[in-house]
Length: 225
Ligand code: PRT
Ligand code: ZN
Image (cartoon, rainbow, N blue to C red; front, top):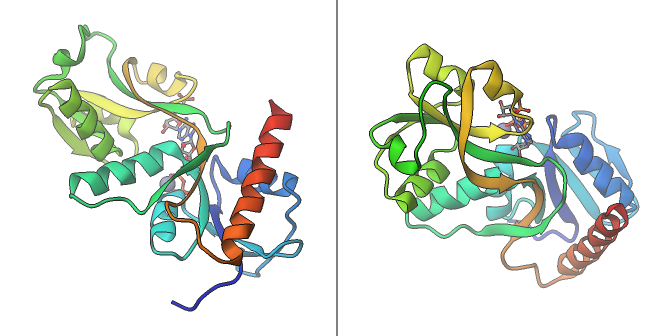
């Protein structure tokens, strides 16, 4: 890959984290000119550019060295770390700094009419999720054998459809669970948006830019608190 002298940060193109992510970077004094296809933002105030992508692609872009940093939910990062661990690989990216927005939790939920007496209750059940690696990791740690049903979306309707007995999904207000007659019974992961990056910072100008951006982000977060 061609060496780069500009720092590249991956942010979500459109979704729950997009506005907050861009707002945070603007507060750090970064100004951008957007490309016509709206996928790339060229940094005009500092040599820091943005790549606008799907959130799920962010850990991979960092691992492949296409981006130096990314703003992504801890849930996405942790799922890809858990998936790497499950296949005996070590993830080449990690969490650098929690950012205090996009808060939610990954939780197990059961139909309201089912009693819950601890993780053992889940033994033998089918659990639908888009987070199979984290779900399996949690079940294994709890010593529970259950079947993980991998879905790509609309997890909350799986019990009603009969394709699963329980779910493991993100929850923020709890309204979605309630609307589907589900009850949160166990938390697997507390999540928020985080700054993610390569475990090894680049040892050149990009490393200096990364430190500068980190200090500015910390400053913005402190003022907000
Ligand atoms: O297109 P792309 O792949 O980039 O986006 P996406 O659709 O995968 O993600 P998006 O934009 O929905 O969410 C991005 C990130 O926001 C997630 O990875 C989380 O880190 C964070 N986040 C915070 C949430 C929620 N809160 C949240 N409530 N992500 C999803 N939800 C969903 C949840 O899956 C469930 O369907 O909202 C529903 C529950 O919300 P409540 O309020 O009814 O409990
Ligand atoms: Zn996504």
